[in-house]
Structures are given as structure tokens and as C-alpha cells.
Amino acid sequence: AEIKDMAFGSDHALALTGDGKLYAWGSAKWGQVGLGATPQNPQKPTMVKGVMSGKVVTSISCGSLHSACLTSTGDVYTWGRGFEGQTGHASKALDSQTNDIITSVQLLPKCVSSFVETKVVAVACGEKFTVCVTEKGEVW
Image 1 (cartoon, one colour):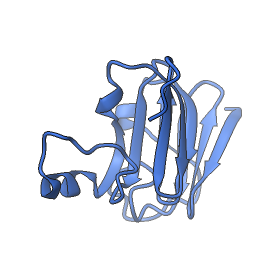
Image 2 (cartoon, one colour; image 1 turned 180 degrees about the horizontal axis):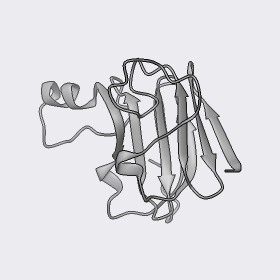
Image 3 (cartoon, helix red, strand yellow; image 1 turned 90 degrees about the horizontal axis):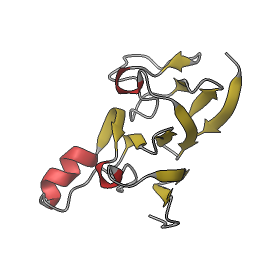
Image 4 (tube, helix red, strand yellow; image 1 turned 120 degrees about the vertical axis):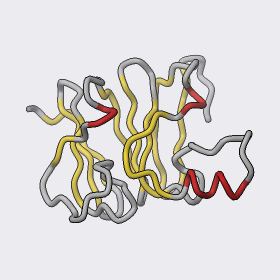
């Protein structure tokens, strides 16, 4: 398949094909490749399946040790190291100890629930953060 885009973290990479498939390779230490509890680090591009099967990915980004993607429906998925909150999976309804457990390491792509009713049009990762832009022009 034709490669449409690529993104690079500290020691992992993502590739996006023209038909919206997501591939990852490199270090899986913090789950940043999104392939689950992989005992080894994939050295060649490996398709990210599971929850991403059937989804059309339109945009990808890598932080230092986490990753994010945007789908054609405007959903944001993140995975990898989340100790600093960069995956966006914390909940205001939970205490800090529970949030620390939930957000520490996400081994598989997970939809960011904060945006379930909001269409996101852009996502970008920095070293330890992720920024999203909604269709209304709001920056999160």
C-alpha cells in the first residue's frame, strides 16, 4: 500500500497508508506502538488492528513515548505512556490514584472519551502532550 504519512517518536514510528490503515514499529516498552503486550519490539511496520480494524485513519502523530491518530469520523485514539496525562484518558469522576492507574500505560489504541460528541479535525503530539482541534476551532 502507498504510504501517505509518517510520524516518529523517540524510538518508535507510525505510518499511514492512502487507504487509512495504520502501521507501527519500534520500541513497545511503553505501549507506544499500540500492538498490545508484545514481548518483542517490531522491527518492521506491523498493522495496528484490534479496535482500529475497519476504521479509516486520516492523521497520525507521535510524542516521545505515546501516539495518537484521528479517524475519518473525527474520533481521536491515543496509546502509549500516559503518566503526564498525554493520552487524555483521565476522568474527573475518579480520584487521582485511580486516574494514575488508568492513564499510566495504554498498550492498545483507545478512543479519547472527552471527544465522543465532538468532531476533531486535527491532532498533534509533543514530547509529553497531545493537542486536538475541533471542527468549531476549539483547541484542547
